[in-house]
Structure formats: C-alpha cells, structure tokens
Amino acid sequence: MCENVSYGNPRRIGLIPEASDIKVDLHLDQRKKGLLWFSTYTVAFDGVYTIHNPTPVRRDVTVALSLPTSEAIYDDLRFYVRDKEVEAVTTSQGWLSTVVTLEPGEATRVGMAYRSRGVDSWMFVLGKGATQVKNLRVEVTTDFKAIDFPSRTISPSFSS
Image: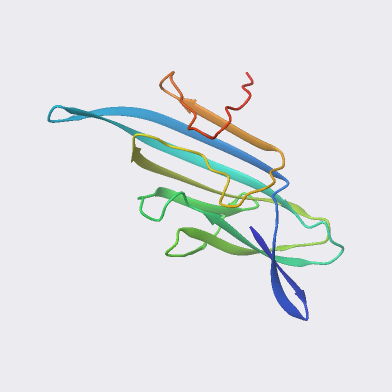
C-alpha cells in the first residue's frame, strides 16, 4: 500500500497496515486424468486491512492490493473500502487500486475477496520485500488434515 503525500510535489511512500485480518477457505478436489491423480483445490480468500492516517492533515491514500498471480481466473472478485464495495482500477500485473481520503487520525478498513482454483499448492505470501507486519491474523479452514509449510518458512502458532 502506498500513500500519495503532497508537499508541493506528490511523492509515494509505503504505508504499513495497522492490522491484517485474512480468512482463507481451502477445499481439496482430487482429480484423475488417465492414470495420474492431481491435487486441485478451490480457495475463497477474504483479506481486510486497517489503514491509519497518523498525521494532523487530510491524506489521499492510494490503496493497492496485489492478486496472487495475473494468470489465474478470479470469481466474485470484490474490492472494498469502509465495508462498501468500490470500483477499483485493475492493472495487467494483477494489482487492484483505488484512492481513499483519510481525515487526520482516521483509521479505516480496506480489503478484497475472491474465489479461485489451482493445482498442487496454495501459499499466503506477505508481499515482495515485506519487512514489517503489524497485527497479522490468518485464519485458514480446510477439508483436509495435512498441511505442509514450504522450506524457508515458519509454521505459525495455532490458537483455538
């Protein structure tokens, strides 16, 4: 996410969400083609991010959320601000973006949701170059028991 800050000339700076609440629902669908079995899946993703204007001035914030890949097909793709669906600009690189005006000290929620399909594995990645995350909550529901964590990743703590 980026903020367009205007001090004479607009410039872009990174804006770290105050909180991220991610919900993922994965369903395994084993398929057979000839003699080979394939692990296909469906995924329902809903990510809500809280952004905050800590400054004493009104800010126009460009919120840009990345889809996992520009090569997938997304069903029921929704982009929302303040819990209301908004029209977003979609780029060929798989980014959805819109401009949100935040009053001094205002915090608001932005997010996106979609359904999609894939083969073999699904991963949640924080983003290229992410160095800091605040208040991250990821809830994953599945219809299977085995979960592998890719190499060079850390398994999360589980809560009930």
